[in-house]
Image 1 (cartoon, rainbow, N blue to C red):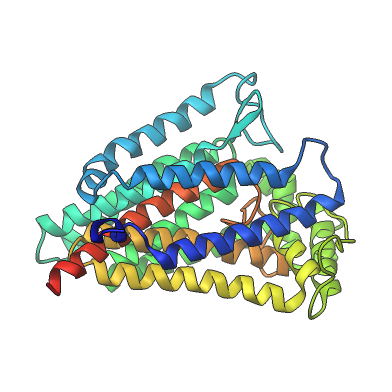
Image 2 (cartoon, rainbow, N blue to C red):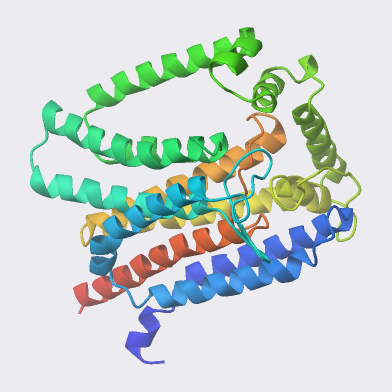
Length: 390
């Protein structure tokens, strides 16, 4: 292997990817023992998704950071257009699933555009911040307010389209990413603090209204009954007998029954729906116990640590790459916190997968595309450091 080839061999990222694949396949294999579906072998399908994702990562190494920077606007627009096409598509190719029109359902293939649009939105947000910083070297309240408006509008477009599906869980992910990018963009803390107060007050008032007047929330705000039940169950599981309450009980039962070391392969006994997707962490807890669950969380910590160090070190070479690294970090962080949090009962139940572990073509491929950009950034950082010390 010559020196140029060695730049493209990022051992830490490759090792993390292999470990996540192993955890995912073991967890999905155990989830299959519940025999919820008769649609084939989920492990084989997940292997195929990971293989396609790995090819996408390899293909993306032919793009440099400048090309990604210039192309970010076009991929963002493409993501928005696809979301619009989804909403206007007939049910023959966009069949509603669990009350939400979030998927293109083609023969033998289902894809969720909202997952891919997360990556395109992060790319364009990173470009927006970089361009703004280049134009306004000295910031003030006026320039910071302008940047805030740009970021909000950029995220509001896909969020409104996703709420039309409706998919509140995915919309929440976009809003979290927006919040992280606002903080990282260097906007004045006077503006950020005011924004936090306003958003917090509005969010608190909305939650209070839903809890106190669930019927009015359904009639006036259009919030579905099952979504209201999820919120009520989150605040007080003893007050409802909804499907969400049942999921909480089963998830806790599965986690608790795993105890310290788990039941091992083929040892899953607690039945609950969506085990291989939304509640994959419960499968891990039951199968491999507290030790296995802790190791999975530590694996995510290593990935987040890599993203932090990469984002900090690449900033002097490419602010765009740095902002993207932290944007992608926020995507991983909210998915992990929300998915594990809803399993533990500290967050409301949403259809948010545990990225790189949960079964699903859209989540795997979109995450792998995001990782492909991260891999390219890591390669570029290695090249720049090598030149620096020559």
